[in-house]
Structure formats: C-alpha cells, structure tokens
Length: 166
Image 1 (tube, rainbow, N blue to C red):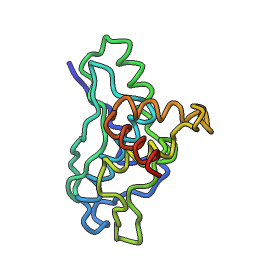
Image 2 (image 1 turned 45 degrees about the vertical axis):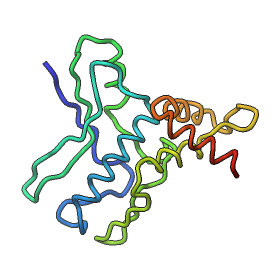
Image 3 (image 1 turned 180 degrees about the vertical axis):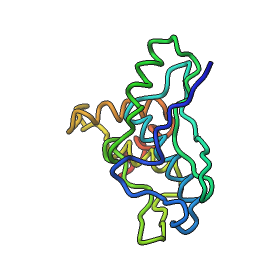
C-alpha cells in the first residue's frame, strides 16, 4: 500500500506563494513546487525505484494549493526508506541545493525570475561546477553537481558547452 510524505511547497526558511494573498497564486505556487522538486533532486538525487517525487494537491478553505511530496510505493525497500528519511524534512533554503530563489516577492506580487525549469537546472550546474582541475571549491558542490548531472545529462552537457564557449 502506498503512502505520501508531504515535503512542503518551498524550502522552510524562504518566502513562498501564499494562498489567498499572492496575486496569481496558482502560477507562482506551481512554479515554486516544480523548482523545489529540482532542488530536492540536486540535494538528494533521483528517488530510487519504489518511490517518486510528485506534485501533491491539497484542499483548503481558501482554495487549492500544491506541495512537493514523496509517494512511497515500496515500503519494504531499504533504499526507499533511506531516501524518505533524507527528504522528509525538506530544505531550509534554496542555496542548500545550489539554486537561487525562483520567485521574488514584493508584497502580494510574485515575480518569476526564471520561468524555464531547464535553465534553473543549468544555472545550478554552473554554480556548483568543478574547477578546471576537477576539484570543487565547496565539498557539497560535488554532491549537488553529481546528482544534477546524473538526473539531467542534457542540461549538464549544455552547461559544459556554455563554459567552453565563454
């Protein structure tokens, strides 16, 4: 039997879309949750077989909002249990995954800074990339870069091409 672990709509210590307050909430909320999914993949890698990161729809008196969740389908798998334990607390900030905030908030207005999720991944890959000698300036960058490059090989190649063209 499957169950769902709700991770949240964005990193805990970051501003996020507010149901009933943010103008065009649905667009901001959906974009933020998809960015959060990418950030979780950067931090923890792709989910193992037996679970998956999903956009979870929640009902509230003020309307519908979405959060990132882990759908666990194989409760007996040690890999699934380890992944669930790693992701269940979520992230504290975007920078923990090498990402910048996808949305800036000014009062009730949400300004989407990067509307293309592919570009968000490329940006994180460029931020966390290794030095020319293959070393990483920050040890955590090796983890983030490795997870993103494994999950998104096409974006990793695009990031490499941009560096050689510069």
